[in-house]
Length: 225
Length: 139
Image (cartoon, rainbow over all chains, first blue to last red; front, side):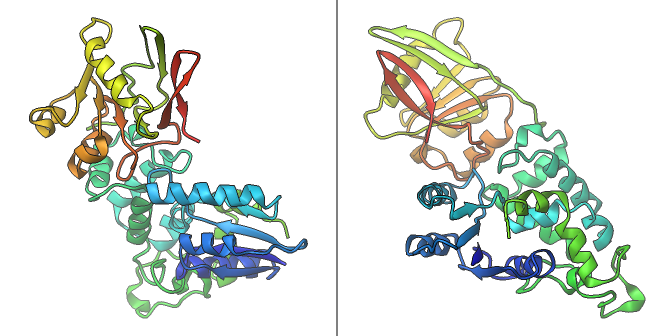
C-alpha cells in the first residue's frame, strides 16, 4: 500500500483527499496524523512492510525552532527507512493555495493591497522561508512587521485566509470551500456575487487546474503510484 | 524600511595564538549554536579587542553587561552586531528590529530561532580543527 500522511486535519486534509481522488485515482491511503508530532509518533511506531511506501506531507519552514527539531528527527527516520518513507517538499497547504496562479482571478478578491503583498511574498520565497531582504515594498514589509512573532507559516496562513474570504473559497474550515471543488455556482447570493467566475465551472476541473499548478506539481511528482 | 541584501563582513579572519579564526558568513543573520564550552564566549571576548581595529570597527557587541541594550541596539546602522546569550537578551521587539533593519548584519549566540528571518545557511557551530576555528553548518 502507498500512504500519504498529513499533519493537517481540516481543509488541508480535504485537499489531499481530493488530490488522491482526482490525480491518483484513489491509489493512495490518505491519513491525517493531526499534528507534526503525530506524524513523528506514528513513524516511530511503524513496522514497514516490504510493499508499503509512506509519503509525508510535513509542513517545513526554517524559521520555527520546534519545526526544525522535529524535521531533523523526521529526516533521520526517513534515512533509516531505506526509501520507504519519503518526505514531500512542502512549506504548508496554504502556500500551495497562495501560489496558485488563478487564485486572484477565481476568487475575485479586490484586496489590492493583499494582492500586491502576495506577489511580493511569493517572489521572496526561497528554500522554505520568505527572504525579507528580497522585498522592496515598504507596505509589504510593514504588513509582515505587524505579525506579533514573525514566521513564514504565519504569513502564509494569514494571507491565504485573507485572499479566500470571497464567497465559498475559504481554506480555513473543516473542508476546502465549496467553490474549489463543486460545480459553479454555489453562492447563497447569486444576485450580488463576490466571485471572479472561473473559466471552468465543473468542480473536478477546477480542482484539476489547482492540482496541475506549478507548486503542487513540484510536490506530487515525488509520489509514484 | 526597504529590503536590501547587505553583508558587512563576508569573512572575519584573525589570529589569536595558538588559534587562527576563519569565520565565513552566508546570511545576514548567523546563529551560532552548540553546547557550552565550544568557544562562543571566548570568541565574543576576542571580538571585543578586534573591533578596536580599523578593519573591524563596524562590529558592535552586546551582552548582559551592556547598558541600555534595547535603545543601543536600535540605534545601530551599518554594523556587524554580535549578541552573546541572545536567548536571554532579545525580546520580540529586538527580533523585529533584526528582521527589518537590513543595513546591519547579525551574529547571535542563540539556540532558538523563533521569530527571526533566518535561512538554512544561518545555523552554524564553531568547529576546532588543528588550531583552526571555523563556522560550520549545523547538521
